[in-house]
Image (cartoon, rainbow, N blue to C red; front, top):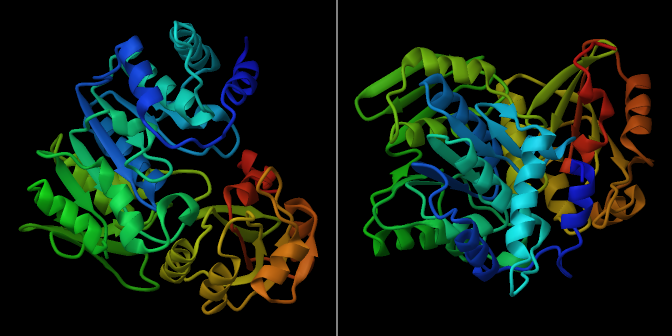
Length: 414
């Protein structure tokens, strides 16, 4: 089977798309002998910022000469985005080989029904081992305690942020969600925590006798709005005038503290990561018909607030806001965060898929009146007609919003 056929197949091997629990993955890890997919493993959990942190960490480790397998989720255009070797996507053939090995082991008696996410996680572990990498970077998906990657005992754990999202599965308070995320922690680990962790995360660190490195205390990012550089301080060291690139400084700082548990990081390596590390859909900027389009996958209030800070840092003031969200998100909360700082006019866009919501439903949920469009291409044409060259247009609200932005597949100025 080719990759598309495999993806159709693995999406239909379990009755539920999400089935929390570790027993199936534990059994498969045993069958495939994947308990130690790499000499060193880093897990990254959190409500927001996981992909950016892994991308920055990958850049730092590869820059230091290590061989690195990275996982990212979800993908924007191609499944291959989820599995990277030294920063490059794995080929269809490599991923198909992983799925084939997993399927052969799965069919042993008793046959195990795996979810799409479990298949994907096992493929990452298999590819890490087969490629004999030095480090595997595993992005925890939903939660932490019951995420498929949590069957692996990691050497380093990062928790980027805790906010309200996926409450149906994780709980309705930051403390409850924090407890789920803190399920990735192990005694003896190097642990790096983002800012404003709830008590449940700190309590788990105390239970395991961990001494976490905490943002704002053990390492500090200094940013000034409108300044196109930032500073990082940790211990007795400081690096100033780091360039402001695609990734948020706070996530680069988390990655830097994790990397120091594995390698020495030079000032030049840190600056290069700040300038060059890139992940689609995170403050991604494209010039389109003279306008600057800023794309971001922010889809909950905490991420929306963070997005607004990043816009201010870069002195970007959107004249038009194009927003597509999924049905199970806090639409009104996201609108309130963005509208409080961004004065641009809104165009609401239909989202697609099982969790899609129409623009009209989104307007009702946000309790606003706004122009509406059936797809992002139509919305962009409307926004272009209402803006001038050099104006900023913000496209955000979900991974689906970015998936619909087909112009991102070309770097050309059109």
